[in-house]
Length: 158
Image 1 (cartoon, rainbow, N blue to C red):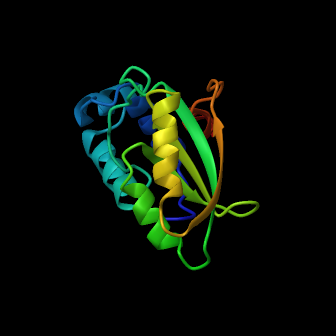
Image 2: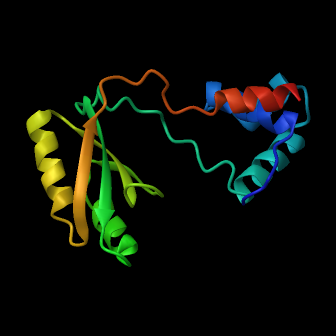
Image 3: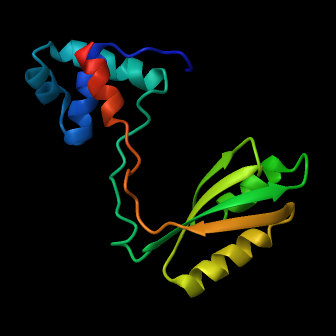
């Protein structure tokens, strides 16, 4: 739900679950110094409002054999975003797709096992009906990985 604001307790709870994702409700309550019912109510509200979407494990794609990450900007035919997005979602190596403004229409994050494998993935992407042009860049490193912790820490201090 857009516009929902977290308070300091919400932020502290989410930080705790970020650090120890498998922590139970009772232990969260103990560590936060609040009642178990308070923690459960907060988790229910955060889930209901779409802030907390689950507890998936954090995976290292390189350790799984996908050591190459690339980003592609796709220009697509007008009116084909849904169709193209669905086709991209069917490509296993496509990790994310964002509709964007600016030079391209879609921004795609994909992974591959090698340069040859990346060529295969790019060929699949280019072969999607409605894709007119792509521009691909290979990530050399990730100096700032995906994160939300700084936002939660700021909220926890408020």
